[in-house]
Image (cartoon, rainbow, N blue to C red):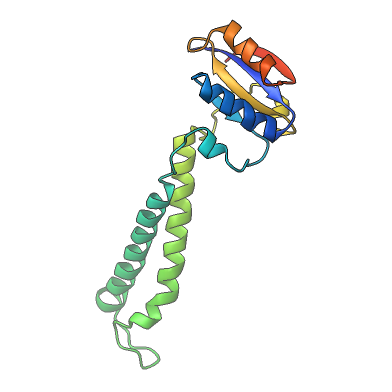
Length: 170
């Protein structure tokens, strides 16, 4: 499925934030905004909600804790019960380092895999790029031509001081 996108490139993040405010005031449907680095206040300007990735991180960390704790409990009490160093079979303080490491491991891997799946950035996926300079030094606002008339978008970009106005089929 291909879609035609009209986008404007800005030289400065303050110009970008001002343009987003103007677009919100005019009720224009912004498809996406691209920046070469995080811009303070962009989430609020685009009315984005907080990510729920941290909830996933908690769940993955909890699964790591359970895996470590239950695995060591089974290993040291049922599978191979050996008393070493004078410790009992079920020694919770001895389990803490491995439990911590598996908690961090499961949380890190789980959040990374979840992030890649949500963003569609798996192995072998080739994402179309609007403009190579977006990741270098330009800021971009993109409109889908189905949602926004090209004339209105062009007028918007000219009024908000876009350095360039381009169109591309993705």
